[in-house]
Image 1 (tube, rainbow, N blue to C red):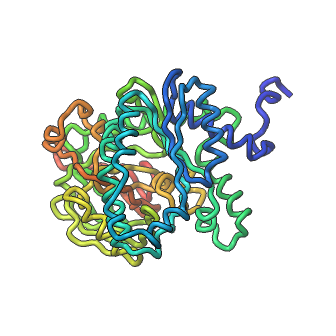
Image 2 (cartoon, rainbow, N blue to C red):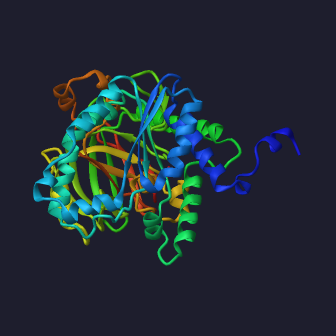
Image 3 (cartoon, rainbow, N blue to C red):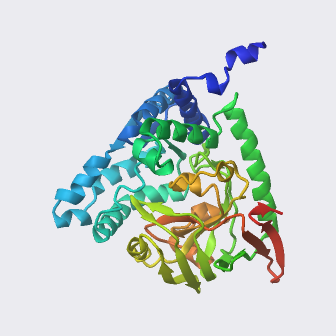
Length: 423
């Protein structure tokens, strides 16, 4: 046995505590690229406390000056819907969000741990859910703008929690479901290898090659067409758009990996140049509500018809949030043979499901996906076709039955994907 093998035991032999520590190390070193002397502001569900503690340890080892964690609690959230006065649902703690935004402006990094119950609010009044989401989006806009402009280094990782695990693995005993979900998270997050940091570097280089190819092409649009015709849509790309994928250098000069896991190459569509019909290939879990079998029609960039077999009221309230909520802020290409897709698991969590399929996002565009966009005003961004909204909600449209063509500036079509795989 070599010295390297002694130093790096096989992942399968590690305890859960050791595996969580490895995920935390990837979150801090790869996801955040946390620098010595930085603050870290973290959000997490209460059930993710073991991972949050490991991330806190790794952050301090990396030189963090202070780690501040804001915890969410599902039963407390439900208590609001059961007992709060009606006025509560139009209120959000602006003072707290202003404090978070000020933290980011002062140099803090941001990390979010995903893992809340995807179906938490499924039985609650959709009107109250919508009002609460709008209030939260308005309060959080200053902080969210710093994130969508990539002014700071940030990342999202996931923790297996009981209610989420039971939704992903129905019929399994709770302990078994949680254990299975943890193993799926470790695999998708590329921490189940001898050297996760090196594995992420190699993966980032592969994504960069694909991004460079797409940027060299300068396509005017993408044409998505499914074998059954339920999706047939042309997504025009914003003027001076830039493709991105893998890691990025934030405005503060720190190189970070915004999502763990990630398999996507994404860019900014033109808010007025989307036409056709789209059917979701996976359910959408949004703010505790489940929306299934979404079908929409776009005309001139705007959704003019929208249906769903479950959660339709939530969907229609979502796209009525503001003027930009019916338009696209992102389009992403993901091969159907990505590790997450090949796992065959429906995660009911956008962080994972969006990396199993090509997808689009309603709402706010990323200014960094435009040449020089991070320095532009809202008016300048809009002129190039970038959308503005309080929301940014990804939903999946790709599958092994989806073809994608790149439409050149002269209108000719070039095959990019066939049956969900890169050509």
